[in-house]
Length: 417
Image 1 (cartoon, rainbow, N blue to C red):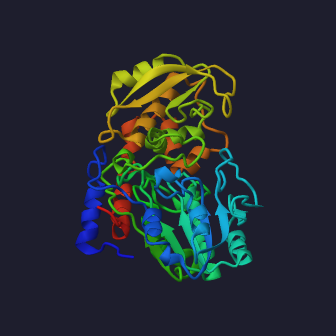
Image 2: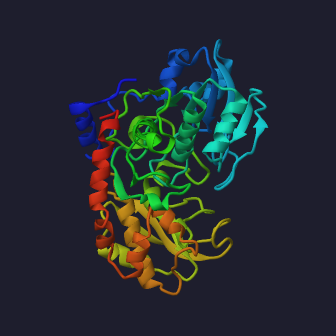
Image 3: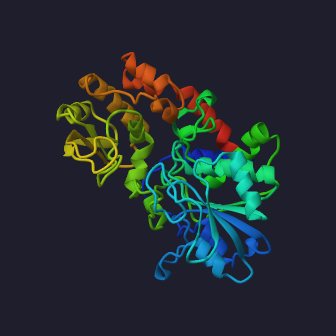
C-alpha cells in the first residue's frame, strides 16, 4: 500500500478542505474492489478469506449486473472464501434499521454467513476463530457520517483481527460527501455503537483512510498492538474534492433508508433528528430530507427561509409515515432542498432546524428520553446549549477548536487529494 506523507499528505488535506462540490472526476473512478478484480484477485490468493460485506460490495461491471464480490471471488479459481460476515441490515441487505439477517448458509454460494450486528470484540473474535479464516476482508460503502454503523463494524473487526492474529484487507470506496470534515468531535465518555472514537461527525475520510488511522492511533490504546498487516487496496481516479455524482459510479443503497446520494448528503445533519421526538422521515419516500411531527405547521419553513441558509431552502410539507415514529399519523414539517454542494453545510443547517423547531413548537419538540442525541452528537453539549436557548451560531462555534484539531490529526492518514 502506498500512503501519503509529508508534503503529499498536506496537499491531500488542503484538497479535502477545499470545495467538495460538484464536477466530474478527471478519470473514471475504480473502487478497490474494481482494482482487485481487474488483477484477478491475486492479492487474496492462498488464504482462507473471511469477507465483511453487504449489498454495496460490488464490482463495477454494469453489463454483468454489478456482481457481488463474494459471488465473483467464489467463482474465481484459487480464491477461497471461507466465511462471510454480515453487518446491520445483513449481508444481502434484507433487514431494516436496527436489524440483521442472523446466521445462515448463503444459498447462492453455500458459504456460511455470520451475523456481526451488535457483536462486541470478544464475540466477533470467536466468530473469526470458528470460521478458521487466514485473512479478513472489509468491503462496505460508508456514507461519511460518524453515527452510521459500518465504520464501527470495521473497527470492531480490526480489534477482533488483532486478537486472533489475522491480517486485514480493506477495499476502499468513495466517501459520498467528499473529503470535508465538519461538526463536533466525539467525547470518549459518550462512546457507543453509533460512535466509538473521537472523530468528527462528518469525518471526510474513506474507510481505507479511517482504517489507517484506527490502526495507528486507537488499536494500540485498546488492544496494545496493531494489526499483523493492514492492506488498503486504493481507488484510482477519486478526488476528495468531488461529490458522489463526480465518480460516475452507480449508487447502491447501503441501507434501506439511504436510497440516494441526496440522502447521504443531508444525513450528517438531519440524522440528528433521530435523537428527537420528530420524525426524521423514515417511512416516507425521502427519509432525512423530510422532517416533522404532528402539530408542526407552515411557520417552521417560513422562519427558516426568512433567515436564509447557505446552500439550502425549505418547503412546507405534510406526510404520514408508514412506519417508525408517528406511524400512520399526519405530520407537518419541512422538506429540505439543496441548491449546491459547495456551500451546503448539513450539520449547521440541521442545528438551525433544531433551534427553530424548539423555539416555535415548545409543546411539540423534545429530545428522546434516552438522550440518544448525546450519542449521535458525541456529547451532551448540543442538547444542553439548545435547551439553554443558544442560537445556532453559538452551538456551531462551540466545536471549531476540536474540529481543527481533528483535521490536523487525520492528515497523515489521507490517501487522496
